[in-house]
Length: 361
Image (cartoon, rainbow, N blue to C red):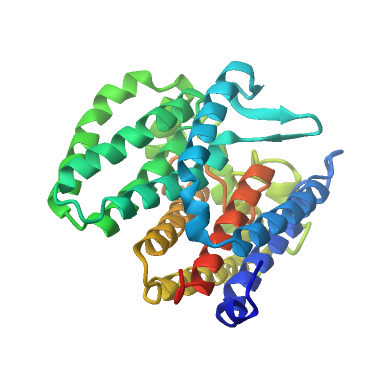
């Protein structure tokens, strides 16, 4: 249980900022899906409740004790990634979900938590070893199988975000720029060879990112309509439930991948800035803990969480405004999706946990 003295270090600003972001997400999911038969907002509210439970669980137990079970959690996560490929639920040509009766969940979302814990736990254990490049290779071997399993689903966006997170955590732990540059160079050099393994729709997404007008009614349609919606919102927007692009269904996946377009159309430039300000507060509170945490394990976990949220926010909003290719990455706390919301809230709980116990592990 939580020692009352630990509550003195509880970051209420981080906690309430997360709650506000989640509620804003539910509000705009309601707006975006108002004309649909399924009440996605009510479902998201249920997922929010589950996420709140997950956050409380993550806060309650000492994070160092949670980390001790990382290997077991890792094994279960990889097993679930294999199972989902065998018997998973297929939607839109992708096999990413495991059905649990009335609900489904994505094992790849669980692995986002696992990857951060596993890499932080491993790097903390080997922090005194001198051969930094050897450590980098070991990290690569730890993540290569699950990342490949995620790519096969296919879920290229999640795989890219995990690779970014791993690089960030390793860099903070290792600090060996030379080793990191070698790996980055190898990764970039392999891109032409990886091209032929991409699905046809993935290749089209990359091509229309360069020029959306190549296929304006196909692969480029979502980007074009998203930019129209954001531009149409102007300074103050049309108002809640009044966005034309959103409610006439011109924007595909406007309650998931393109929820930012809905926000910008209905709340305008001012509303989008308010949303970005809330994310800035989220990062400010997490970065403030980085300088206070005394143990390396807690530091690396926070860096992993910051990196994961940062890459999701940058790529998702970048998709909406046309500066990033469409990858299917959700906007943290706003996009519809139970697995994503619960996982993100659990990660915030871990950060709160580390902040509360930063003086006593």
